[in-house]
Every structure is written in structure tokens, then in C-alpha cells.
Length: 235
Image (tube, rainbow, N blue to C red; front, side, top):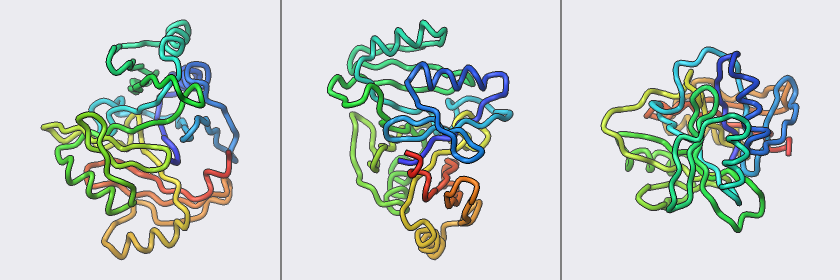
């Protein structure tokens, strides 16, 4: 997919990092001055900073991963001293609370190749149809459905849309500060998007320290999005 960029208070940083590495099996990798935590399908980046709140209440309500053995994963998580705040028997799921109040959903798929794989990002919105259309029009992908949730499917991730009555807070400055898509031909993509009227918070530029090109924009419902080209090479 690209990456997930989480924002945590300095006091929670080490516990949050440990949750990804020891709790879910992420592999740390240095990328220039940054540390990336690698999981199948996605890169997780942690930024220290003052957070305006956890993921719940923002446009990105929670993050979703598949696990081969839910019971073993949850048992390991609890032994590390972290919180499991909900279990569901059908489908077999558990919801974890990461330090910094970031919500992560685990769903069991016994046939997984890897013990853990990235699966979905759950967006909450007052306009499911409009949000689904915007992501399809902007990034392509394929319209799909999972249970009662409308989705857009991309390599490495599904975006799931849940209806809410009140507009959630924007993600910038929250627990899940932004989501990131890896795009081949990013400069040309940004030019096409600008010609369609999409405004960029940070225009296309190359960051030599991490050998990656980037651009930032915000969707109409407040989800802050980073676009990258070159981040996938760290694998």
C-alpha cells in the first residue's frame, strides 16, 4: 500500500514501538534519519509529538490487520501488558488499543502465508457514497464490499467506509496522523490531479535523505494523505 504514520506522545513512544515489533512482529529498518517498521503490505512510521487524541473520533477510526492465529496473537499481546478491549466470535476478531489510544482490529485468516498481513483502513464519514467515489476517481482502485461496508480495494489495502451522523475530526495531529499511498510516476500523477482541481497541502518534491519523492493532500472529509514514490524500495 505505502505507509501508516502514527503520532504518539514522547512518553508513549517506546511502548508504542514495542507493541508493533513484539506484539505484531514488525521488522524495524532504518531509512535515512527515519525508522520504518515493516509488515507485509505496509510500512508503519512513528512520529513523536503532542497528539490531539486517539484514532477514534477522527476520520481514520481504526486500522485493520489479518492474523493467522488470533488466539496466539492476543495471548502474546496481553503478556506484553497491552489492552484487548473487544473480542468477537463471528467473524473471529479482536480489537487492540495501542499506547496513544490508537485502535487496531485483528481478523483471523488461518490460511495466511504470513503470521500478520495488512488488510484495511476504516474511515468514518457522513457521506459513504461520496467518499467511495472520490477515492475511485482520485486513485483508481476497485469498488468492493465487505459485509455491510462499502470499500475501495488497492494493492495492499482495502479502504472501508462506515456511516456516521456527525463529521469526525480530521486526522492531522491525531493518533493516526496520515495514511500514505505508494504511487509509480508520482510527479505525473500530481500534475494530473492538480489539473482536475485537487489542491496539495505540500506539492511534489524529492527528499534526498530518504531517496523518496513525496506530496501531501487532504481528502474532503479530513483524512491527511501522503503520496510517495521510492518508499517501497526499503523492502
